[in-house]
Length: 451
Image (cartoon, rainbow, N blue to C red; front, side, top):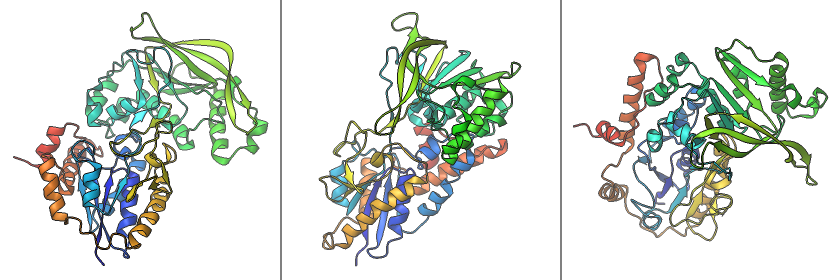
């Protein structure tokens, strides 16, 4: 029985979990080539998880073990759809798995959304994490107050990063350019706005609880926005713990002497990002005050009461979710931002599969991707075992690498990534940091192919 060759497009958690499951297969045996547009793997673990969350980032140790297994190769700086096409990959592999994630933002769709000073959290998170696409963002952080629209962990990450002290920042792998930006920042207050109530907010308990550990930060919640304590027993455990934390802050009240402040405003939807002229910078946000109603299907939804509030601010961060992007030559559902599929098999296609956020939408935690990938891989392996590819003769591993080298002069293989990784870790060691990130393509290549 020959070894089957599978290409995985994308090197984030879902891609690595799919690779691990494929490499576990003995009948049929499988080798895996993993592709990424960037020189560096790990997806949002490197470029999305907040730098002050090293425990979450430590999941990359699992991916290093997968990458070290026989039959695995990594090819960075390969842009599928530009450098190589999907059809060319299908000519060279028995199957192709798309693990490209959700790479852009969900829009608010309100007036003034694109004013100077109104930023997508996707871009801002990429900037402070050293994603090469966002190094040039250079946000103006001079404003004293910022508003974050959203009530999930990304919104909380953005708010927290804006308010961390210099000592905390310099202990992380926050990109150097972002550390300097944060240290010079004028932001001292962040208002986090969610359109529904505290019960419906998507924060995790750990993320809320750690706010109490930030020196000089006071957390503010309006007691009037909290639900009655009598209903706590009916809540699931995680939500109940969140409510306990939020209620504790509401009862304690703000510390007037704290140098930094984070305020939560629930039941607020953005209507307009305000400015002094049509294309002038942000001066505030107009909010609708909501009430909650339960629909016939049991869903709780916010309803505009007609009351309005204005929050003066100089920065707005939009953190209402990620959305997938179409990959040239691959089916795509614009409404959901996902690739249509059935249990991971792409609809209407043979030998093409999907995992992760581009499969199910931007939901779940990092570990959710393991179950998701296993489902897809089961179907893929069953298809390979059917014998339909038994007589196929795809190019050898060496032929594929020769083809890629001709197409992609800045190709980065696994040895190249390990050279980058070793350099970043060594650069961070003197300052007690996990790593100092390289963020420039030419700098990556200097490490991969030293002169």
